[in-house]
Image 1: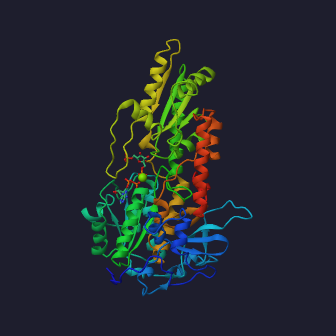
Image 2: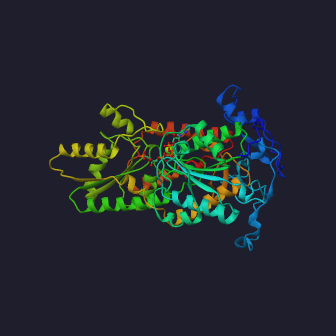
Image 3: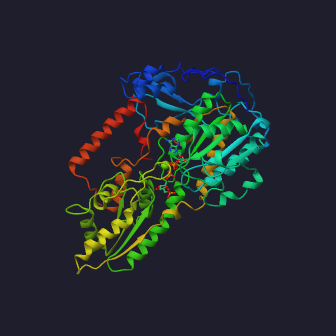
Length: 528
Ligand SMILES: Nc1ncnc2c1ncn2[C@@H]1O[C@H](COP(=O)(O)OP(=O)(O)O)[C@@H](O)[C@H]1O
Ligand SMILES: O=P(O)(O)OC[C@H]1O[C@](O)(COP(=O)(O)O)[C@@H](O)[C@@H]1O
Ligand SMILES: [Mg+2]
């Protein structure tokens, strides 16, 4: 493996390779710290964090939150013309390469007086690359839970590297992070991956736990891997971030690239994660079944539990798409069962009015209520994620118990748990296209020497986003936004909040908004 043994340069060093035409100098760390919450001292985590940022300021509050480049710590790296310019498929493309100054804005709704705010580097092929085709040894790994589209991303990374850049050495790491140090690699060629996009799961296998940074980077070094594509969710990208730090500390020429995966759509900043659309579509089948069962019985109730550990996006979108749902419960919106305005009162009323009803519940909803009533012990999976109690079963039992006390009000309740069925399927057409673009954006970035980033669309344009931006917080449904109001409108369910709760939430959101404004972020991305 090529290692120049160059000691790491200060992270906030200005980009030596080229200077964007119309951008001012990097924002000093102190200013970044102020933007990061105001008044942070040097020793605070916010200041440390700010020092790591590669910020470039411009006019009218423009900030580019740039991603690292191999030349930040290996300044002497040679560059080469991009082989894409000789690719017949691209010969009719008007503009082959992305303009080096192109950036993607995070804030899309603006006013006359708005600051221009945070921007990310636009993804896409660059005029110069930092790898020769025969020099590349790429590795691909999938980590965390399954998600429709994993195989498509793998396929398109392999085919893109071969077909667009003439790379001929791509390996797969089997079984997630632990596969780096406990298994042999598997060779991936366009032939071996042809057709895998039609299958659910991941041909490479996946796992939770087992992240050992030193062992993983030893493996990269020993095997001479100089591009690593890490496909996974928030946990995986936290792991990818520390792999990048270690690669950089060791001065290795190895691009570390994250492709965000999460069926829960809980990754911040990005428009949407791949596989989410497929999961929502698949969830419709369960909701339809629940509706048919409920409609066909006297006081029929269908309860459907959908994935969503901390974020209720699948439940929210599946509810809006279906229109057959009478009540949608998500982790972000607390609810209660008994008494006036409670869920049981609502169920009774809806049954009296309509004769049947469908409840969609995200798996992370109501966990505090269940814990209170069950004396549960906190347990975690191998990655440290909290193991949830089964809200679907608990809720079904609570409803049954309630109506048992009312013999003149017989109900029929069917509980449907399609949990793994919505994520074990292959990706639908639009997710397949999305996965292809993600893979291409990822490999263009690596070939161009960028590292320490994830790739994803922001307001419809693919961008390179530094790891810290997506690992610092999760994307959640904001229940004070209009999207959740649309759900409440479509179901006519109670919002379960007192006037005081609503005021407090609005206040919290104002503070959140203020914080984001200081960060030059836009809160409107939070509940996409
Ligand atoms: N904070 C962390 N630092 C390093 N590795 C992590 C961290 N959190 C999770 N991981 C690793 O990332 C992988 C996937 O994490 P997990 O939370 O299971 O799924 P996901 O990436 O889908 O969120 C696991 O192998 C786990 O060990
Ligand atoms: O049973 P598993 O494999 O741990 O997966 C269950 C969890 O995976 C998820 O689908 C998503 O988790 P990740 O995105 O972290 O992989 C959760 O909604 C769900 O709780
Ligand atoms: Mg996760």
